[in-house]
Image 1 (tube, rainbow, N blue to C red):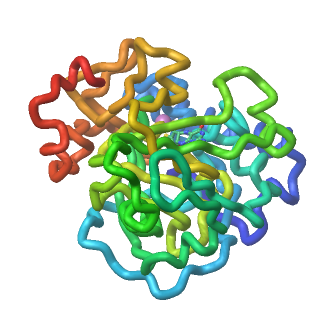
Image 2 (cartoon, protein in one colour):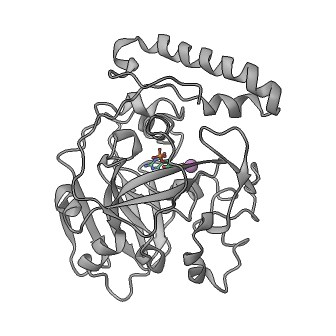
Length: 322
Ligand SMILES: Nc1nc2c(c(=O)[nH]1)N[C@H]1C(S)=C(S)[C@@H](COP(=O)(O)O)O[C@H]1N2
Ligand SMILES: [Mo]
């Protein structure tokens, strides 16, 4: 990266927004002038690589983290990239903007409603959920359908811990996750770029898979707002959009839930959305990906390299069930 050390105070706090955005564009321009010539990589792709150094580590530490056997040993993506380059359409469609726009987002008090086909329907305080099981650090690859990827030390525990306690009925076959709807706090929800609130879903066996993470932190700290505080899902074998942020409801259903992106563009986004280099998105090849901060693309792996989920899909045509 062509970025210096992150400042102690986010420059967004000491610099008017227009100025730092211009600085970002200037930095991007400088990088492109050199790199585009050498690599022939498209201008907009390179601009996406150059995140501004806006955010220093700022959130409370999470103690007592256990290491996870599911962690990759690959190099972690720098914190400043993971927290300044975000898809979070409730705040903005510009990946550099959620960090600033979510700064004052209220994550307490926060409750999560557990309902639908479940024995223990309840409204839980998020801090009660976070205390349900021992927090683990899980270093996962995360692949966005747009072609970029990151490696993040998430903090959380298996979603199955919460599902077991909720005690779903035998006829519950799917789980649906709903993001907060609060257009006063989330400026993107005052636009109709997506139908709000954001909804995602999983089949029950996917949700119960130990890799499915209920997440409330990253880099050993409380989750930054722009990454989905106070509670999100992380599904490392699926494209990033399946990993719903800032969830307020977990509902158990008999029928397959309609997820927001499928509803928005059914020809482009399916329900399963497993990372699959052999099935292209109509507008983007999925064969390769660019790790944030790197220039050259690397091959994308089936299930994003998480082969242990393959048996969940045996016998399924993953070209049809994209
Ligand atoms: N509620 C909500 N969840 C969301 C999104 C969103 O716009 N709204 N974007 C998704 C997409 S496309 C990606 S790639 C990841 C990005 O997570 P990150 O910003 O923590 O890297 O969040 C996913 N979860
Ligand atoms: Mo994404």
